[in-house]
Image 1 (cartoon, rainbow, N blue to C red):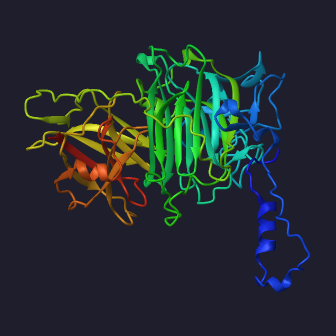
Image 2 (cartoon, rainbow, N blue to C red):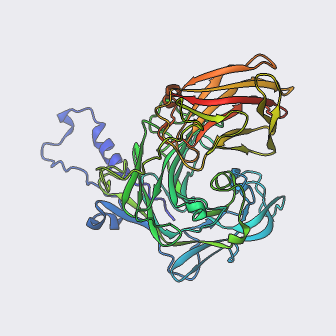
Image 3 (tube, rainbow, N blue to C red):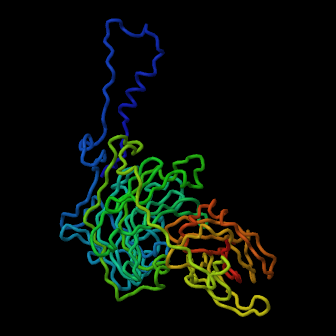
Length: 513
């Protein structure tokens, strides 16, 4: 299938041909009639006029009206990599995991042990016959790469989402050519994600961008949305869309414009001179249903409810439109330029005694509503409460049994902490790895996925000595933190080349006004 990257190349060649002369009238036959070169319109015929879509023209769609998944539009990815997020599924092309019926695409996650390739399909070492990867669920992930790739447009899906602890459906986009480097340097556009719907009242969907530098310099920014009328996305069909134009991306649910991001906020460290990067290259579409992983595990619960499966992600249609006003920039066809829906944040939580303007996160124990979580690329991070006596008494001890990981205190809900002035805490390093390399620490506060975060580098304390840190909240805001919607007020990450064997102790974590 051809790509819908429209370029008026014929016209450009014609203009170049008539514009390269010396400009002398002596080169023109006085009797010759000069005719302007014809303007060649290279847009698809159906895009010449489409008034019903406010300038957007349908250039690609799948209504799933056949008897099978269209192999000229979608290809299955087949692997057991865990998505880089410790997910539990293997993706297959089995008709048990994805099929078309009743004019709908069904993607089903099933509890069953499976094996498959341990690397993603695009990895140069990928072998379809490899069985070194494994998972405890099977599911499906379909993409349009090299069959449907677009730069700018409106990307829309009508779907009913699955539910249950561990469910993670997504409709999203990745770069086709990775022009600025590996993830997330070349960007990621998440049109729709949701986790653990109906668990603990969970009813949010998310729209997010990923960009920035390599971990831990990666960034993600976005917003959550709740469908009006207390409707849960797992109870019925809803329409999810983004409109992507040069320098701007907008998110919609059932026509409500709930979020906008612009090139003033995104960037890639691979191309600092291009303010539009990385979202100025062709991307393709992905549909998948993941199970478990770091994000679902940190929302409402810490595991997977196996009894909730099988679960189905049911898609009515997927449609792609491009803007007839300007195919090169995608500008001129915005569905809404006015005010849009925001979901207000919650009131800030009170400290246990709520008398001194302090929000205590940890003082020998984690304070409600916060609990300790970890993320690792592999291995684990140990967390214990140790009584060291003296003025500190009980402290949190963090042991890194991984080369790459973070630990953090997080709540289920996000709170407005914008009127706090400092984050303060005590920390000491009990042990550094033997091959620590360039030793350092990074503090972060964020909203969890998908909100923006603020990073703050920390000076290393003297070995085995307690150090007190006081970080201005404004510095975190300047680093990208959305302080009005924080559910993760403390993240600590060693930046050693190898974290394995590092031991930290922390105490007295307090946000102060």
